Image (cartoon, rainbow, N blue to C red; front, side):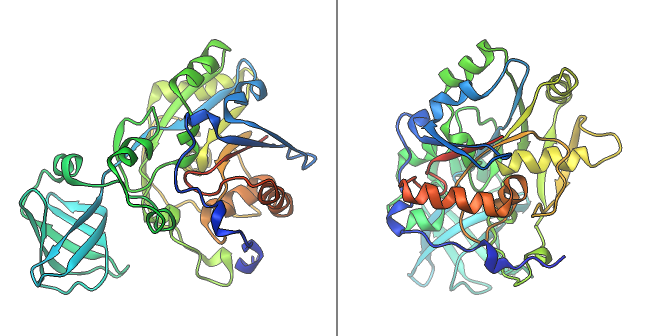
Length: 341
């Protein structure tokens, strides 16, 4: 079935792009969408517990964002701005940048250097650093990898390293935040648990695949890049226990959703697992694992928008977006949230 990518375009005013997060985290706005009727309610994220029931299970992605933006100088003297996107082997990384050539030497703060070895077929530069402990180095000298639409509106500061991170982040490996989780506070998570709502955690390291835009005119032809995930046995048990007792599985973000749906499609279902997923969810997909979705407002022609459209319905979702725009909801990574049930 052909799906016109143009049907997932919408116009939005630039001033609604959130360049800074809400403080406190759970003071962001929450649009609650009833999938059966399309009706919308307008609340704050801290009101989320009112829409969940004892026995439900909320599934969180506990990946931790790397401080993987590096700014340095070329050996020729010009500035270089890198987004590291993946480690090939110790000390060898791929990166997004511009104007680099094979053989060029790059110099970074803390006396770190890298040589450019070439390009991958996907257009990423291959860099060989003069140290293998790059994760420790990034903790000290790297900057938060804010999305381009935020980075062009503000200079990344030390506060972004912690704020572009969920409060429950644990496993290092993402080059972008699972942004639906940015609204949770420790107090809100405790409120959910006190209400009898299970909190299950999995890991999907967000890579280029999640935010690479859809270029094909037929959106069904888009191909996701692989992203690594893991679900541990005790966390799988929480999800299965909720489902078997009649509770709902509420996924926090499109990344958590893609892990759950990847596992649910296997003969063995949702059990402990580790691997890579290239699952691309777009309208027409039949959901097996989730009953509700917490997500942000996404860019046009993006794979998260396609997933949300598949879950809510394209026309209902875009109608909700239109209402959100009219009510001045804040958009994208640092923006407001939606709960669809």
